[in-house]
Image (cartoon, rainbow, N blue to C red):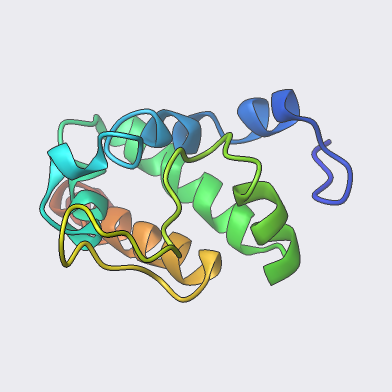
Length: 125
């Protein structure tokens, strides 16, 4: 069982495979290819993904967000899930945006997935 106090990079990959996948695509090094701002890159995350991926991502995000802020910071700062720092002030691209905490960033990713039209449609069905 995954323990946020004692984990390896492999543990993170195994526990959060969908988030790791996002970190290699819309929230990865080329995130600016998915939008002009960090918020646009986040909104791009659900696009082109099947409903199963979206639902599993939501589950992983709920699990991650159940941890303390310190645990979320430690997990995120391993750079296994992301190859960008959503809390950093970056110069390029201009007006990219940033989040004050990793928790705030992951909450925004969760909202993007939960508000995806296909996810909404499956919830009301």
